[in-house]
Amino acid sequence: EVSLAASKTPIAIDINATLAAANPERPLKRLLADRIYIAEQKADLDGVPDEGTVQALARSFRTARLETLRLRVAVAGAGIFALLFLAAAGLYLVAEERAVRIEQTCSTIVDELERGWNLIESFRTTQFGKLIASVAEDLAKLPRPSDFNCDPG
Image 1: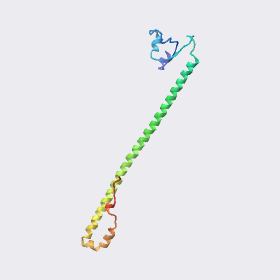
Image 2: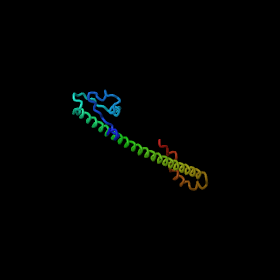
Image 3: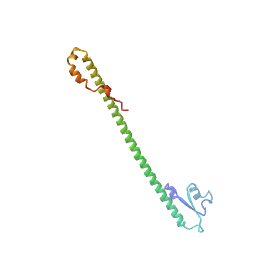
């Protein structure tokens, strides 16, 4: 009754099936109706449980604690992996944003080169362009826009 009042699960050692065979109307039987029973057979009904039963009970508690520890370690590991995933996802988004900016910058550079080439071509057809043909030839050594590829793939 003390264990139940403290919200603790009592473990009853059922010697010679005394609890299992008890009248369901008895208060102890009603209190322990859905609790854990450990069956034990012995001649003395009023004696203490065998040492083997107590040791088996202690072993089961150690096993339960070990399982709890394993579960906590597994949850901690899963938490660490979740944090690593979030960090990797954040870094991926930053890298994608920077790649888009670099591609836009590259496209702007290629567009400016194209505009420069068009200007050079227009100089070649004018009187002024003929006067500065030698300069235009030097400018013609600039890389062609078709030499650049902004496609990251």
